[in-house]
Length: 164
Ligand SMILES: [Zn+2]
Image 1 (tube, protein in one colour):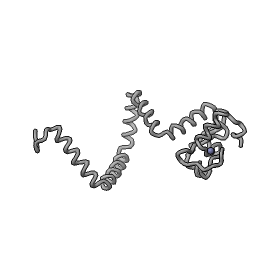
Image 2 (image 1 turned 135 degrees about the horizontal axis):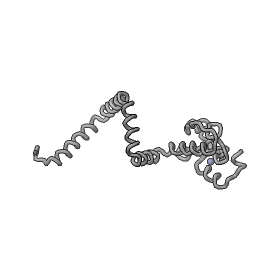
Image 3 (image 1 turned 45 degrees about the vertical axis):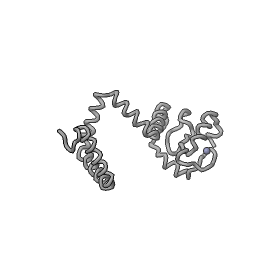
């Protein structure tokens, strides 16, 4: 089939260009529609979706693991949280979900190791009693620190600083 002198393949490309151009012109409207549609769709199908993805993951364990690894790469902060949880469990210490931003806000964005201001991009959570020494991953046992200060201290293993 030929229309407007285009081959079927060219026509597919052309239609996609037209559609993208329309979407760009109506971007906000389109985005709002998408969000609304996706929200409604999720609500209607949440049980079905969960059952389906559980079954799919069971049948494709390798792909499922790869997806979860990729997702962890995209959300490094979640990976850190999980790692803390795993380590706290291994060492038999307590664990509660710790929201990094809550800790940073609580500490006024100040590094407890050097006392200077911490920007979000350089902020990390430091365990006052290290998890390796049996410290829990809880709000009471964490403090804001520059990632660099955190790593430097970790390397030296300075017990004095840890208790300061
Ligand atoms: Zn610091």
